[in-house]
Image (cartoon, rainbow, N blue to C red):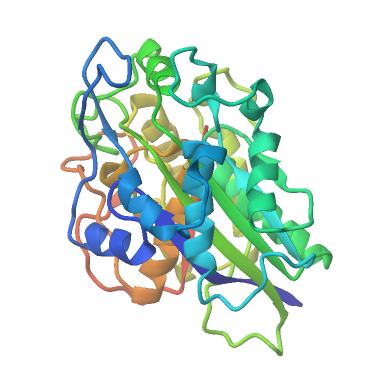
Length: 370
């Protein structure tokens, strides 16, 4: 049997441009969601969001990088990959290394005629960004692009696992991101889905989500059982399901998530699961759907958290960022509280994490829905 394991990672959010900075902020219960200047974003109404410090981000890049050649979206991913690869001991230019790009909107802001970024029309395509990123790192392979709404990051990790187990590659660089832009904010405002305060996952007073921008990179490798050191985080199993319920509304019975949960759990014992990291957007329908699916799967006793209260919903980066945070929580054997939660506001009695206590479990379950 072969094992897919974590080699290195990086997280870029409003809380910092390295994984260490982000984890320190999370353990200190820092919230990166702040009021934004809606005029700068071309938005008529004030809104809260978690926004990356791009000047700080540039410090991760080599001084020789020509910023004018790349969009802000692409620079964010290039910086994240560069940081994750530093000291990882592998060649990004090797034919044995595959790049997988995860994003929901990519360079969507280029559609705005008033955008300060000026690139040719082709650059709006996600495959174009994938090509630019691979070319930057001199990687000869055609990048794989995953764009499946809010589950993109988790799907990208499962896709990487599939490629590695096929024997075609020795390493996979999974990188993803999204920006807070006029297009994205306007879209969520049209659904009346944005909260006027930092979001409160699973709370009785929750009133919508908070947007966030960010990027993350997870570098994965594969080894035979007898070669694996047993110390690294392992991607053990996963599953996706499409309930075909509605273009923007989740199933009221949690059917799609429930089916994915049951398939993913076929290869593990539930007593080994230390916690469940939910998608937890703090919208009324998503949190309720997840609570129902967790309960239907018989997992309502397992501690549950959401990281959206720290950095908001980072869209195509969410599954990656949150999986990396989960991996460090496992390595530290330390819970991360569900920031913003006070009193239970869903119909099922979930065991929401409210502190940073230690635990003894060896596995976690990461959920995503979209």
